[in-house]
Length: 405
Image 1 (cartoon, helix red, strand yellow):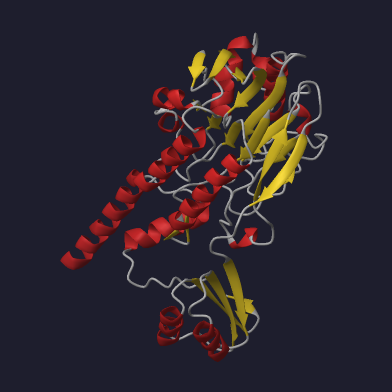
Image 2: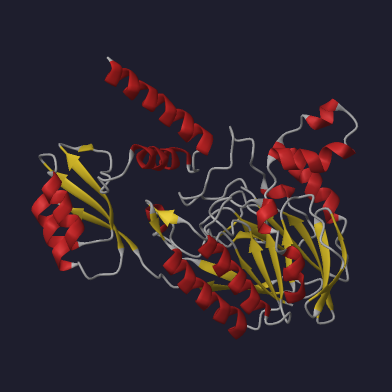
């Protein structure tokens, strides 16, 4: 069986408030061709399909169009699990319709796939945390653990715990208990795979992931993964890598696009594995294109920065501009740079050896937009509308009091 492992598409994600969906659409078009060219039997998408729980309509359309095309009228199985960015219920809402195309969608660790036909293949057994699939006469048992928040993990395990002492075990211990129980679903006559979306100890974050750890509690050790698994397909970390201590079986595919300037130092890829019953996987790496690179321009003066913007005004890239200077930047200088090079995202002046905060180039933003940008930058999540409404109401009250005074 030939399987392709990918993850962390983050459809709808922006960079400093600028949409990346054109690049994402280019990636998806290429991804469809990759799946076809390599005769993939099953595609695994290991979470974070979207960048937010409420993705843009265009992002959803791109995802569904891609699923339909890679399914090839049900010739190919696609398995999708939810990540920490996804709304599990929204992600799997199209599940009943997707089934005819060979698409299995699972939102939480308690999700149970329906047994029966999926396109031209079959789910022959399923339960909480696992699914058994028959593809072209071969059988595969797949342990499926979509993003296991502490709340979701407790829902899965607490019913089986007899006392409070068992319930206060660490997150890692509980995950090990879960994987250990699911490990019994594997058989000697099946291909045995696991897929999850979580943070494994020793993995190297790339800088643009939403931190899913609270005081180090939401983290697992590589030893917790099911021992009998031939391959463990993971999502959440944006840098492709092997999880230490797993005998190279557990891997993060990473995100397909550089979503942060900290990610530009490594290549983006997916894994293609050939798996046979009772044998080690043969694993190949497929590198993705860079559709619009992120560049960091370091200039020794304001004049050189302006010259660089002029020289590279037609270059198709995102730019972080760092300028060494002995004075503050004037507004007209910032505007000149932005007019010359339209894809400048941030300008960071370095004055007398002190690194200043990035300058927001959009000087026409409302207070609400500025607050939302600040909140996203600090917490990596959009503020609740209720929080924004309360803040705006307080400001309006103060303005009214000042006008009365």
